[in-house]
Length: 320
Image 1 (cartoon, helix red, strand yellow):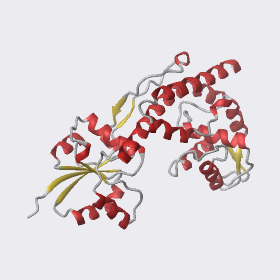
Image 2 (image 1 turned 120 degrees about the vertical axis):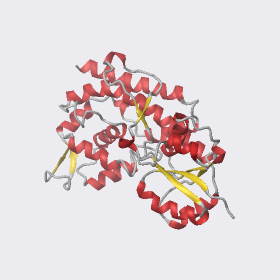
Image 3 (image 1 turned 135 degrees about the vertical axis):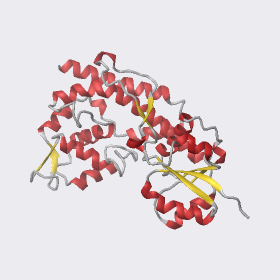
Image 4 (image 1 turned 180 degrees about the vertical axis):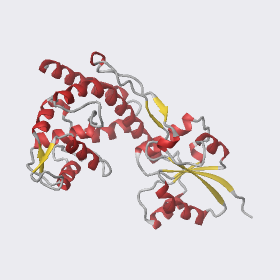
């Protein structure tokens, strides 16, 4: 008679449970599944100094993380550390993406879980097709697989870059946003790396009035890059364009998002407040290279941040 196991399954969100758990139980019917849903950001977030003076930028420092309260971040049947230590087996059934692989390592490190990755099952989810999910389970992959390691390395490189970007963008880009008439104390008080690249692409490429979906296609294809380097992801592009619209950087021929969109006077003004080298159409492809060589790539990221924000800071101070 097969012995039952207490199994902890780490999965992105509750809605994915119906697509994964039944197929796992088809192959391992004696398992008792306990869930921990990470909702993309795991259980940690950046702890930022939001009052960094402009004089301190560009700043190079190690990321500082803090736990996110459970009601803000994830749905689970208890504390991750307690669940992982009580489990006979752990499954990582998150998406096949850098942040998901890194999230597992973050959780295990933060909670002191010493289970070897060679004993953690890895089901890299790339969709909801039943046959594909069944085949991934049958592969019997573990979290020490080279593809998992590669994804986690890219995830670590991205997080390191994102932390340095955030720390420096708050004081440096805050000056640019205020100069363009955008309130930096509200929801529009920060321009993300890909929102900035979207703004500068529209300014430099000057494609003329476009429908909303055409802007999405422009970001995906990114004609300014000589190699494949899409701006944003399939999940984030709507939010990037929404920031441009809500901040008044886009205008429409009918006054609505459904019309033909182009940069407004404010959008042109904001774009003019960024140094020419802030436009980096190859940014997303850089992450691949930094990830492939992580952590040896940290000095390259440091140089990029120093140059990027150093140039922008000097550029803004000369204009003020």
